[in-house]
Length: 117
Image (cartoon, rainbow, N blue to C red; front, side, top):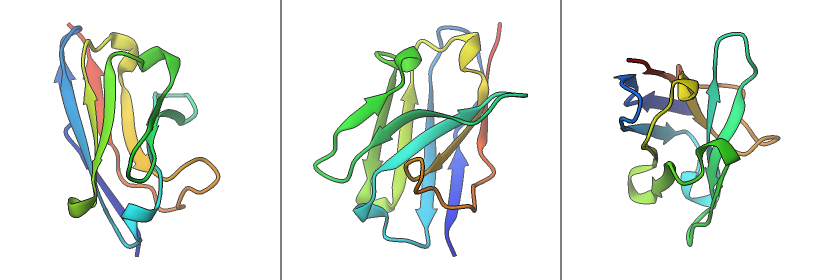
């Protein structure tokens, strides 16, 4: 079955960095664009970034442009999100899945990112 295992979150001070990872199994990862989403308490899950299949192009929501970098390692079925210059408003649970409209119903547990001094 499809599984997403997110990791790499934690508590970081404003201005700090984190790298998130998502190990994917159960479908042909290399054939699909992949996305990072985030969900803050009481809010809807929102798309943060996506990356196409190789040769990859990327998309970022305006609030993270220039600070976050999405990448993928198809040999490892793994999606990454490098997050720099973190702000308190980046605090959320981060998830990976396919593009909106193509998401699998079986979301992972997510990884919590907390940006606070």
